[in-house]
Length: 256
Image (cartoon, rainbow, N blue to C red; front, side):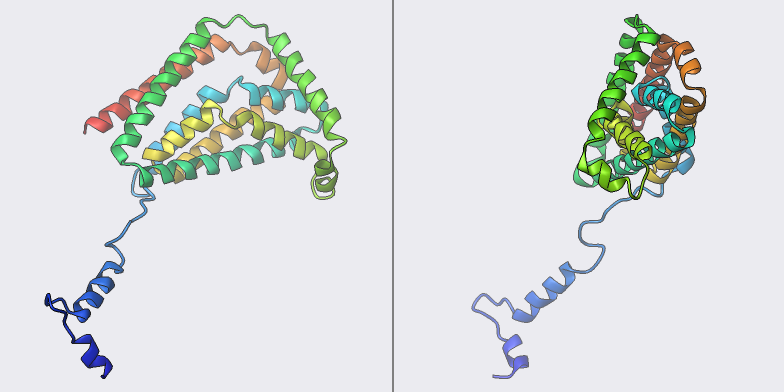
């Protein structure tokens, strides 16, 4: 039997093989399957400004700020700045990618509602932390410095550090690794994921990078003096109000 005759054969129900082949080909046509939404059509300027001010509100005087300030007192400032910013940039891109993936796995409405809940939670939590803030700045700097000394004494014996010291200086690696560990799971990372889930990810990335650059540069070059004079209550209340504004605006977007 020829191939053309075989394709024309129909079964008892009248279903043709050639019809089946056509359906399979139609199912594979681009545009009819799962489309990945990069959200690049949304305003990059809105995303930039939102992520920029969010980073300023959450990172100023935070643990990563103090780590960069303390390390800059003991090591070359530009080396510490390069290591810390490299880790923060990598974390920002990673968080934005996670935020882009979420709406493609879950409905946009669900992601927006979850983002609203997260913004509200972080807003009230920051205001609560600011209201209970009674810590001594000198004690905070001493605690971070002691932790850095302990990690430095352990890191000198590690094979990982000896291997990569051939390509990067130990100070650069230490600043990057400590910043990455401190930033992982931090509220700024979760907020970056939430912003990238419903904003233009390119704008979110560059806005967060600009905010991290300003905060980390202030920590490195104005470190101890600025860190001890920043009021944690003012920063916490300001950041809490900013998150509540984000929650309100995002809630209005869900209603629309």
